[in-house]
Amino acid sequence: MSEVPEFQSLRRCQLPTELLREIVFHYSQGAPLQEQEASRERCKPLWTHFEPLSLTSKVLRQLSLEAWFEVYYAQSPEDLSNGWPEFSTWTRELHCVELGTDLRVRPVVQWDMRTFRRLRKLRVDFDPKQSNAMLLTRFDQPPTIASQLQELELHDISWPSPMIIRFIGQTFSGLRVLKMAQDLAWCSLCNTCCFATFKDPPPEEIMYDKVVGLPRHYATFLASLSQLEFIHLTVSYGLGGSISLSSCNDVLWTGECDACMDIMFESADYKRGWAERKATIERPPFLKSVRWRFRHKDAEDVAIDLEDEPETPAGRNGYEEDD
Image 1 (cartoon, rainbow, N blue to C red):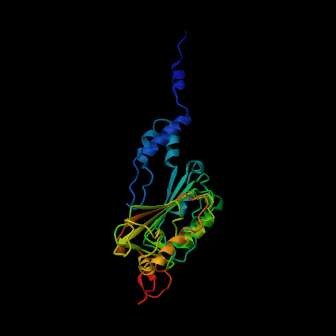
Image 2: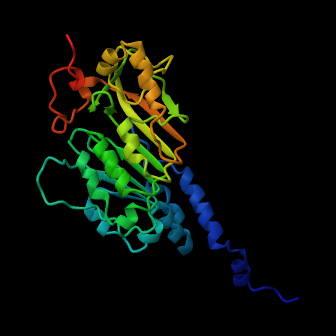
Image 3: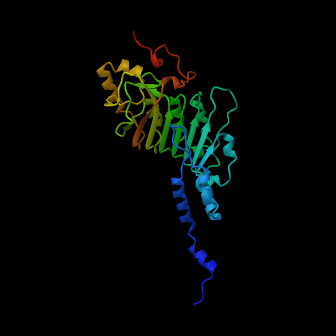
């Protein structure tokens, strides 16, 4: 029998591209990630972890680029227009850093996502020291891309009012997962954003799967999201409050400020009725769970967005107290 030429033997040993893609994908999942702020999840790996793999062959270089650009990091709207044509098929997650403020009057520049046709997740990091809530409205173009997103992750919105939640419900209609992490929480008792304070450290996480677990206005504006399954809310908290969640959450806490709880929950009947009303709030049809997580922060380090804060009589967290 004649010998098989060496080049043919090598060709027979080549792995299919589909299998190589899976190998590179699993490699990318285990690659060390860049460090982020402690309050945020980590970002994509450094290119230095992919570069040796990309130098081994033309096929692996293509697959390495595809895996690394699955997450595209953008620091300005211009970064979205300067992408390679391949990003339309490679990129699944867009990570944008918006460090501007919504207080300056200037031409509106949209973060145009039209290049990323296979996008599934949008993450936006805002500057916690700036008034920034209305900047989220710059991420709705084109509507065909915004409406196909399955996951939205927002960090450090300065004023997480129901107005922002309404925009999310109207713009990102295909969401399955919503994640928000910021310093303030919306209090449904005084209808304003407040810094949460408790008597002692709250549990690491509070999960609701039987009741909606959201401020009433949040639930109202998210009820139209027919595919929404999971909501993750992370808020900062301080100590010195009057209510404890460490051993019992009988109030079904969903963002109420300490000032309101201290006054309103003095009446056991009102406290019980408030919790019972929460159980009847309409929820998105396929919502499976709402998770609240807490991160400790000193009150003096929290930037209150006073430009958006309603004008109310003086009192803790904007709530007028009785004498």
